[in-house]
Image 1 (cartoon, rainbow, N blue to C red):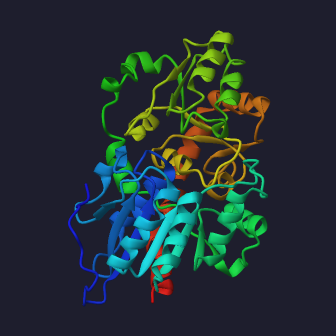
Image 2: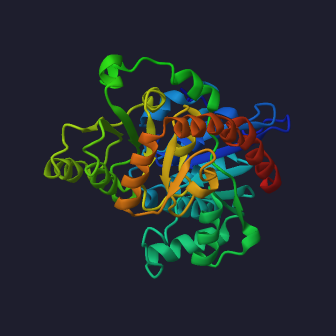
Amino acid sequence: MGSDNSLSSNLGDGTRIVLFILPSLAGGGAERTFVNIANHLDRKRFRPVVSFFRKEGPFLDLLHEDVELRPLECSRARLSVLRLAQLIRALQPHVVFSTLRYVNAAAVLSGVLARTRAGVLVNETNHWTAAGVKTGSWREQLVRWSYYRARKVVAMSNGVREDVIRRYGIPPEQVVTIYNPIDLSEIAQLMQDPVDALGFGENAEREKHFQIIAAGALERQKGYDLLIKAVARLNHIPYQLSILGEGSQEKNLKKLAQDLRIEDRVRFMGFQKNPYAWMARSDLFVLSSRWEGFGNVIVEAMACGVPVLAARCPAGPDEIISNDADGCLCEPESVDALAYYIEELWRDPERRSRYARVAQESVRRFDVGIIVRDYERLFCEVAP
């Protein structure tokens, strides 16, 4: 876990201070991405400082000890602006890097108030047009203004980059794609952890079923209703579906499974700090999302050696998976397609084995050691 110790802004050795800003260290993909970047920056060239509105979340313990923490102790983005401006003036960072839309707006406004010379970067994590968010609200206008004022907008996929350019009218040269960094060595270690104590079941019990796994927030975006309806058509298959995550749709999804009379085959396991041990012991990972920004869990599942079936939704899956080479892509928002390909992959263990084998090689391009170097080049480019 990071340190709360103060860091002098006058480093005197050419080291650049990078101030990361996010709401908390909750268990989301954006938060995990920032943890991975902060942990793996070259300490001879960069000093990471992480600031957040609330000092909470399961990823706090994953930050390395030499990452300085600067909690703001405020509840919402709009309440953080003055405190952030004060922090920026005191710290004098070379780079300010924020994530999530309203945090991005707060970070840019704080930089203006602080009159900072730092390169202010904002990270866009989602495809908001695919999400159905309209552009006319004052909130969206605030996002547009902040993205214009930022030195660069970092998109986590090419699909998100294209959406930012079209949606907000940002000049293409101002928006860069850098894929999310995945710590493959950490995954390789954590996937070895035993899962029986976590409720995944004894080995003999697991082997009786075709183990399907999905992971992510229990929200409409993830399309779990589509997945549950799809597996309900496959009662001739001895499957068990385990869904890792928590969210506002949990009650509705459980009721759907009950209505379809498959509640004994669909298990809701809540947030799992180590999902990799679950993935590694599964027969198929399914991403049924209606839209994504990138799809960290696809890369993580591929790294765990589990074959992946993913909906070809905007944006990310078709930038990660080469269809029928290292995974399988299917039509998005289609119960028919999900059911068809789950059954096809159940019937073809050799195909699953091939996907898993090829995927463990292809995901190396997303390794944190490669991607963080891209971030370091960007930080050097925008730093004063």
